[in-house]
Image (cartoon, rainbow, N blue to C red):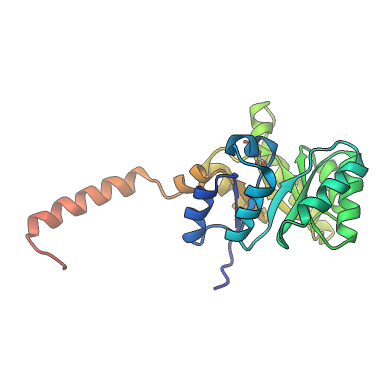
Length: 222
Ligand code: E4P
């Protein structure tokens, strides 16, 4: 079933957490990075392959070289893991060079570590499939992360830019709602933040009252 909504990528290399949310139909893709691979304690090639077996949407796997030639070699190796790999490159000139090379070969590319609209324009021109502006890290440094999502949305819409805005470094449920209001194409969030979207104090209180009243009726449905 096709659902028209903001896309959810899960920002983790924790296979069990991905599987749990995927079973609920909440996963449109996955993003990983070197820190998340470290946290998983797994080998990058093995864990990425396992994730690609679970999720049919784009799975971002990040290169770690800093020069373009080596990035291209690493990205080509990562792309061989599965058809749904999006090669993740940093927003540097070397990363943009590699992005252009990957895009010309028909690979999906996620340009990461974006902190300005200027950088987002360059990524689009280099053929990025996704641009990843980091909201939380901007907020941590007293900038406004969601302002950046808004700026990129305006700039991309002015030219019908095909690159998708993948709002990253999500710290809260409010970040996700703000991104959806602005019209980001995708959010990538830790599993705990996606699960927290279901929580509301009034839901809990309301359920408590309904269950107490139901007990007083002495009835059973089953
Ligand atoms: C994005 O692709 C990154 O993996 C991620 O969102 C970074 O988030 P952090 O700032 O919480 O590390």
